[in-house]
Length: 214
View 1: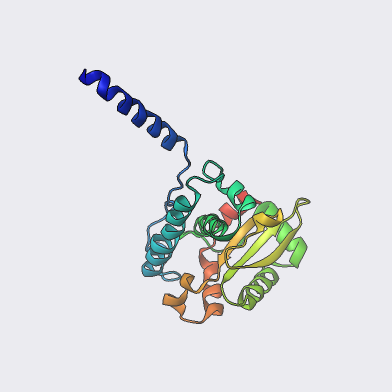
View 2: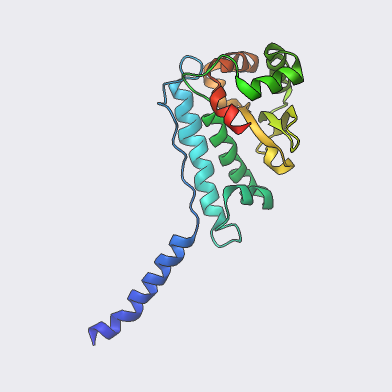
């Protein structure tokens, strides 16, 4: 009698478990370096705030927002392309930040090599010209947003800026380099001096990763 009584509950729990296993839950992406590894360019305190709190909040919000929606089992890229409002903002910020942190390295800096270096040389005449144009556009981004090195379907490079959570993925472009110019990315270390943050950031750019994306 007891076995017959509990059988429906066991089956129900099993079905719920299978359903939950099928639903996509996004995780906080791990940093590819220690939280203090980017000092003195970016402090451990900034990394703990930026990655440990801001990015974690985007992950948590996204997971909560997509439950019971058509986005529940889609990839992050598919969600970004098909959503708007709060779901888009949190999904895009997860994607943007994952790329941003991956493109920084304590062993970074210097200049790109190989095909990416050739493409930058061909487009801007020199790496220094490229950096100058990139910094100028990033400084000019009004309020919160991002600066990007992107390529189009033909392989042509360009520098673009986006507002808030927007990114090149929505425009059919491939992001090669992502630089966060929201104030939480630099305010603890540079206060309101965004140009100083941008100038120092080149010392830790992971050009190997950028070249792979190109």
